[in-house]
Amino acid sequence: MAFSSRVMIPLNITFIIFTITLIFSPSVVLSSSSTPKKFKKIYAFGDSYTDTGNTHSATGPSSFNYVSNPPYGNTFFHHPTNRYSDGRLVIDFVAESLSLPFLQPHLNQKADKTYGVNFAVAGSTAIRHRFFVKNNMTLNVTPQSLQTQLKWFNSFLESQGCENSTTTPKQCEAVFSDALVWVGEIGANDYAYSFASTVSPRTVQRLATRSVTGFLQALLNKGAKYLLVQGLPPTGCLTLSMYLAPETDRDDMGCVGNANKQSNIHNSIIQAKLDSFRKQFPQAVIVYADYWNAYSTVVRGANKYGFKEVFKCCCGSGGGNLNFDVFNTCGSPSSSSCPDPSQYINWDGVHLTEAMYKTMAGLFLNGTYCKPPFSYLLAK
Image (cartoon, rainbow, N blue to C red; front, side):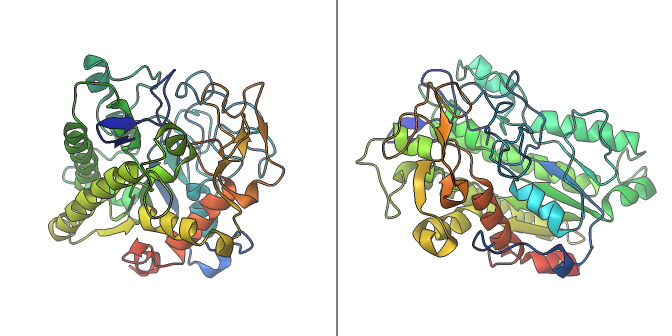
């Protein structure tokens, strides 16, 4: 996901390479009654931070391959749901705030998708997967990318009679007029894969941001009217980054400095392109959700938000300051989980606790970390 000097800090690979399958205080509950029922459905994309079940232990990213085992899901669902957390994700809180049911994963063919579909895949990349295979950059088992998700979405649109906004305008209008298109964070895995490769991080950055912006343009060309795009979080604050990076590489938050810098630059490129899209597609409302600064705010004021552990993961093994062993991650026989996940930011070393996802959702929906504010999106 990020690198120290020339070395990339990966977020989930077998042995050395790892790939990320990438509100207020927890005492504050997001109220669906306070949010207008503007949207009747949501179409979501991204990686494990948004995936509500398109992967499971046998198909998900290597290393973090116990997502179908307890204690995943224990806090809210009381059983594993193939979400990479102890409970709900940001997208779940978004759905609740809009009085919509939780989004069903695309690969669940029997699910009711009246209220939208979730195309996000844990371990997904922005760049096509074959690029990483060609350059011997990954041992990861997840072949999906944003292009896969776009292909799935195209098939779904065709099933609704929407071929494109020009030839089938009425059908596409029906699909998008009351739909929130949520593009969760994506691209962290691309940076992780550049570890120990001959491809420079700058090349990966160029290709990843180009893939993300190309995907966004495709959505807008198809007729997306209400688009929210999440940036990358400060990946250097994740337990795995802290575990792998030398202690000399730390920023003023105590996180891995080079990893955070990489994510921040990525976000700046995406934001600049969104400004361009707003001029190119004036009929669309395009919102940027600032994951980097929202997350950083919580890290800097953890106690205010009810968190006692900023870097230590709740579910893991090995104890110590991080409670993380990359060979015995959450859900493995030797791992265990903390008694109160709500006091932890990090759940399993890469992914967040329900409490942290709830906090992030609150800052996006009710705070100042969406540009323009989420309330503006609703008003439009």
